[in-house]
Length: 312
Ligand code: MLT
Image (tube, rainbow, N blue to C red; front, side, top):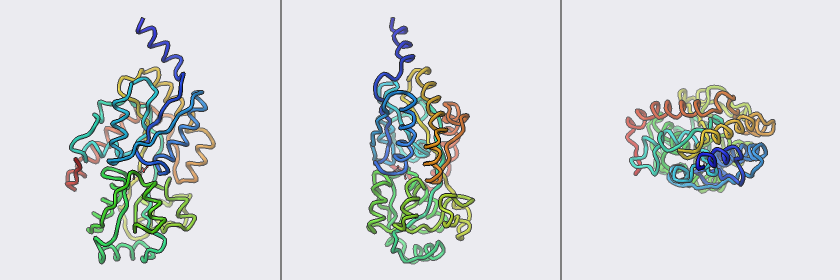
């Protein structure tokens, strides 16, 4: 009877609202991607997807919450590259990265931008690098905690120019952006999903993108290589997860719905406006997300170990 009930409920799924957890603060880049995708998926699934922000500790708190949730399809996680890097960065995690989740699929890959408060003195990337080297710890750098995309980008930048800045951690780059616009912090490296509108509106200054070619929604912002820092490249991939043990039928339904959402013209357009492109059907699958997560853990582990940065 239990099996019969289980498969019947999987066939009917979802019969009530689904919660999608964003492991960062509201109003930031992960939140933006999640809300766009969740809205489109909820139309397809015929049930509301409620986005819940559980920020803190570079995304590991929210991921831990999902790993401990009922594997019934009603609690999901949308997380990014930190899922892979935190596996090495954190000595102790409240979940098992590879054993604690089912995979729904990849979502998108987002470029980053090195930005500063609008009145920050250096006018271009070269001047910025000179300024940071001359002022070091006096320059403040906002990020979303150890393992966050903004943290990784900052580490990469500081290692390339062989200088340190003073880190100011937030529960997400949403609130960090508020402080950058308010000129309370000097600089940040953040995803275009959070910086595009502020750059275009003249609320912050952009020095470079972390891409090899210019981001089409930000045609005036040079790539790092163009601006004088070749090799400063990073992009942030996102995926949707469910707690381990969620039924394969439910996961399949979610993957199919994700694939539809990523072809929704409204989602495609909003993504393009923010400098990103949805992944293909082939990548919005459990297999592709699992393969990406596994290869990214392997790619980042030696980099993190060599840098010797860890969190407890
Ligand atoms: C966020 O949504 O706040 C970001 O993805 C944080 C980050 O990883 O830098």
